[in-house]
Image (cartoon, rainbow, N blue to C red; front, top):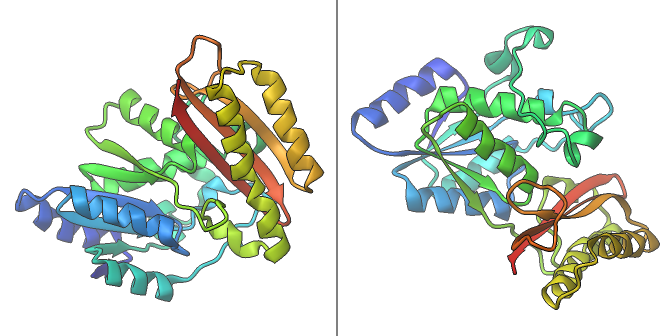
Length: 282
């Protein structure tokens, strides 16, 4: 696996790949790789000729009191996992390499409305930071296809809109959520949880499944279903931020006419903010 920390050296390699008419797949990550990330690599290898994984803990998407400094950084282990999976290239730049020496003067990319609801409401500026780094990585790597996990479904829709609005010739592929045996969606922030907290966190997925089942059996009292799930989570010591039944295409509150549904949840469990979702069609 080729490893680069500088944009200019990476571009030389990618220019060579493109000159051979090979397709490039991009898997952007913040490192601390787990089985969910590896599924992204597998999907990229199956669909493109040359796979580039990026590892960059992006300071622009962390709020003032969030876990930027504590976020796990495990580059040596990540390199071993990527090598074992047959990833072709790793780009692991520094903050200065990506943003220069003054973050305050950065140009931001912003996707309206979708960035302002749910996690965007609770984490102001988060999705501006996401959109900005994604566009930077797209411009650096120039991929044919980019792969994103569907655990952060709001982010996935934001990136799809970004592609459409800016007329970028990049295919966006979503990869299904990977879970542990309890159903808990895999996340680097699961590392912060103790055994008892992991048991509580697994209730997120169970609530999503139960709500989805009730809807599929004909219950369309969406507000009541949301509140029942929130109460159930709170009773278990989970601190819900939101639990929302939405149209899966635009994240507007679901109506009785909608056929594509997503149920989104974000909650604090112990020291971790966790997100999850289920999607289904009626």
